[in-house]
Amino acid sequence: MHNDERKRSLELAINIANVQNAKNPKRSVKSAEKAISKAENQITGNKPTTNSKPSLKALERLNKAFGGDS
Image (cartoon, rainbow, N blue to C red; front, side, top):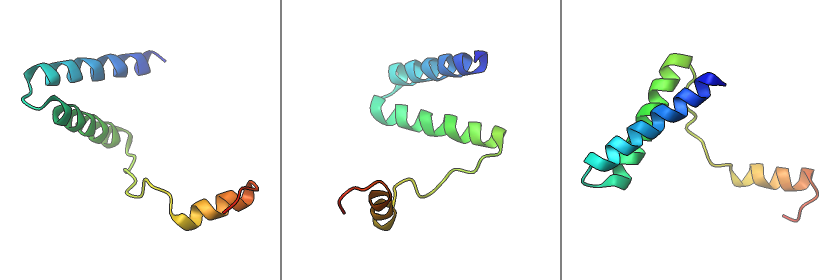
């Protein structure tokens, strides 16, 4: 719990610094978030997933499993 709080504080500090110093703040925030994720994945050994969106077939199976219309 303490580590999560420290992580959120670090992310907030990085975002504030990037926004204040950037010519394009939105792009800078996104790049900072990517850098934080990359560093976190290197430390934990987790590999980032490339398929973040579910496929149409997966959504159809999910709808069928829970009785939804497809």
